Image (cartoon, rainbow, N blue to C red; front, side):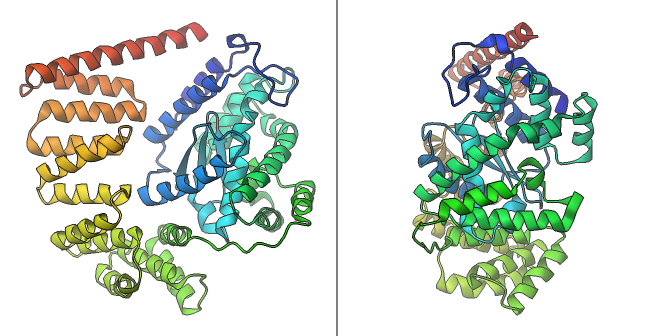
Length: 477
């Protein structure tokens, strides 16, 4: 991740001179960041994460599940109109973080470690509250306590997960920033707990998950001392926070909340992907042998996924086969197709995906897989037709445009290939790369007058957009 670019952008966007007279959000000071500016800061950070952070995990099944749960919580939050995006970070540690503008990152280890879906929901509800209460903006407003430079360093500290990033944070001269952050944000942590608790309750999850999760974290911190879970370092759990959470559940009627099957399957899939393939396989085999699972079907699905990862597709197929006879779910169908492909049965994989899409026509992961399978079989016109249909329903899906570009490349349609790839780059936030693709489209010799006119018009728009962004950055320096 390019630490320097994030720092420069945050310092530019957090300038106190850019806005005044903003509404009070629970703090007596005026804000220095408007919600629109927060969103722009978040978008820029996400652009760097998507393009440059190898830990960014765009697994469509797990990401879709995370956003379903997250958006359920958002709909019951204090600002249901706020746009949110929940994304995965491939990291076995327990952590989650909120970026400005509604972007919430969740380590895969958080889902694996959660002992119930309500625990995961408690983490998400807490992070959502940080966003809806504009805690980042309110930090900027605390003149004399936390400068914008310190705030930039804090954002970097939150997303830094490796020694290189940590060194970059230290190098910008904010030696005491983490101590300042913990002391300063305890009120925000309490506020996020209180509001997150309400969101959790309104969304139908088990509110007892919040204090039980805190207690487990505190115990882990004592066990590991200086090597405590990352979540404890960015969200310090105090005895007071635990007591507050326990007090909130007093008098509430007991409500048993079952985990969704989606949670069980996603958790099993992520467990199968952690560590080395052999270690993951041994762990999942041991859990099944010792009956250490809350859902046997999900546990066996995880084992089949681990076997496929360990390059044992025949055993994976044998493990999954009994589940397919008794259970229907898009994730099971997706795994069945991947196993058939690994066994060299491309036609069989197509059949599984086609049948599954009859039952789950709007499932994005299945549609991605079916389009890719069609392309691998050379059925590019069928894939193109399905892509057109999907893009009508999801016009801001960068993955679909990238698949469309790949399909046009197979068909030898160079102008359309570069045009589609340009739109993928636009949605990923890389305007220079998009402009370069449109320039390549102009140079192709296979476009007609109307196609070239469309490319030229889009190129003018993107150049103007990039020029405006560069102008704004220059003015803020």
